[in-house]
Amino acid sequence: MRTDSKGLRFAVIGIDHRHIYHLIAGLQDAGAYCAGYVDINRSDPRVAMGLRERFPDLTESTDTRRYLEDASIDLIVSAAIPAQRAAIAVQAMAHGKDVLVDKPGVTNAAQLQQVTDAVSRSGRIFSICFSERHIVPAVQEALERVRQGAIGRPIHTMGLGPHRLNAAIRPGWFFDNESHGGILVDIASHQIDQFLVFTGATDAHIAHSHAGHYGDVGSLDFQDFGEIVLEGSGCRGYIRVDWFTPNGLPTWGDGRLFITGTEGSIEIRKYIDVQGRPGSDHLLMVDRSGTRYLDCSSVQLDFFAKLVFDVQHRTETAMEQRHVFTVCRLALDAQVKAVAAQLR
Image 1 (tube, rainbow, N blue to C red):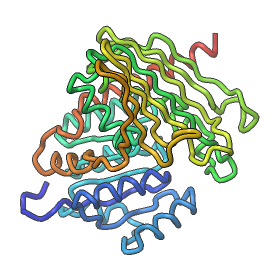
Image 2 (image 1 turned 180 degrees about the vertical axis):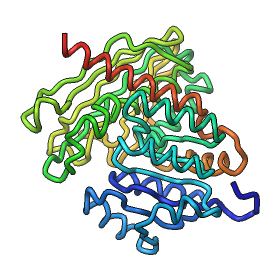
Image 3 (image 1 turned 30 degrees about the vertical axis):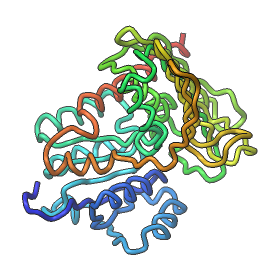
Image 4 (image 1 turned 180 degrees about the horizontal axis):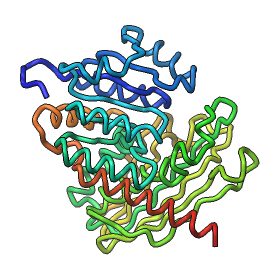
């Protein structure tokens, strides 16, 4: 890593998911400079077009070595096809780069071991942007209040992650479980991350998991519904994820998070308040003194700024490395148990 006083420089390898827009913008807003990107798969021309529209000044390259071998690049960022992210991360760390990937960071146990080994060998950072926490102001605000004791000791979370399928515009890899790891790895990693941070648990156990195909789109192998029950540190959590957001909803999904504490509760309507207040980031809290509503849309997000600080100072203020690997392992465990249950 460079030790001069210049700002952090990053490059992008893989732009197969629209989350890449958030990763680039978040890092740029935190003062980092994007040296360019490589569209290694060209799996979705709509994503590439959207990137060019949003970031017209970025340089596109066809050679990943251009950025891997550039000593001025501190961080490699990737939203490649999920099954490819681990290999990109391992290669980047071998070149002395820290890594930020879109979720899921890995899609099977072998990949998790490879990334874990690469971190151990290199001392580099492997971070995952869990966007349903890291780019949702209401979740950041709720976490701060919970840590301050606003609802007493958290004992349960319920995370709901419905998504709109938009099957007609999805690339082929989207319907292939091997490419994205399955619905519990791909989506529910968000809610696993939230269970751990809100309860303060450093680990958990998958008490129950299920994944299946219930809709009319895709083959029977395509998982469009999943659920998990978690237990950890004396707390429990329930997760439900699916691809059944109806077209009538004016956003891609009614993501919700409920936190129950010993002295209060919080509900977060992340993206929409159905038939209610306009906009996103709605927080409703019941505590010792009564009920209240908080509009969190103006809360300043801090994940990317903290990650930039961590890369520059070798700290773990954005997210502990252990936490990243725990979320990955639990998501993989849930997926494996769900598939095993289907086969019985």
